[in-house]
Length: 306
Ligand code: CAO
Image (cartoon, protein in one colour):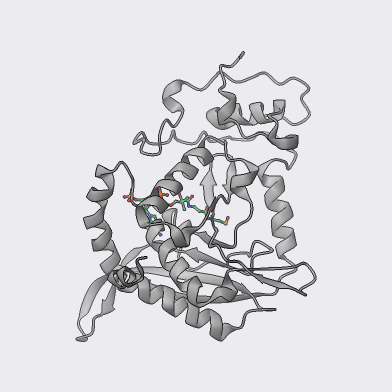
């Protein structure tokens, strides 16, 4: 009340999602870029965020405020907690998995022009259509043919569970750090519904309001770090899942067409990591080829419309 904070926008890290004082302090620090000293018994609360700085809707077009650069004049220790704590725990568990890496490049030229054409249709329905819904739909179609990549492996590597639903975790860069909300039942959703759900989760992610139920139970993870930059990467599997994909930046690069002419092509690199205890390289390569072919000829996805 003191800071005019809407509690529904604050992710609770306490038991059963309870909002703790720390959550409020972190929420306020994210709004202002301030760092809250961990040991301070009652740190001064930052001023409340102005209503205009709070994302109001997924379609909000106002650019995010520029990050406040902190210049440290002396060493300062902060406690690893919240999103960072979860990241440290899950990534340490992933170290036990023998990762097999596989990369390729995808020519998205046809998809780029298709998306451009479909964007206005989506906008008239109030939905922002990015590339992610296409990547996710193609992923689901490829998982149908390679269900072993949509599976959970138990800790002792004794039981592999093929998951029926394609519940895809999407790595998301938020003001609070990396979170991986899950889009459930992608196999049943049309592109527009995937786009709308992604926008909803992005909006909740920005507000730090994603709950435990939205952040757990994924069966495969896709990370589009290319929306920020980079080409190839080495993604880390989120156990008990057995594979993950990471996408690089779409770049216009010279490539040969089928007539041997040099053309400007929209190229994106993809990097997969797979648990080599249950997945071999040939399977990952065939899966990647299928995913790539669907995106290089996106019209072919129409054949799979339910
Ligand atoms: N290459 C180039 N541009 C890309 C791109 C890519 N691979 N992916 C997206 N873009 C473009 C989008 O088209 C959009 O531009 P327009 O508004 O002109 O269409 C712009 O980048 C921003 O996209 P977006 O981020 O709003 O939406 P998205 O659906 O493409 O991505 C999400 C959603 C959640 C994946 C993304 O916002 C994000 O957080 N990415 C970072 C993931 C991350 O941090 N991974 C690392 C995990 S390991 O630490």
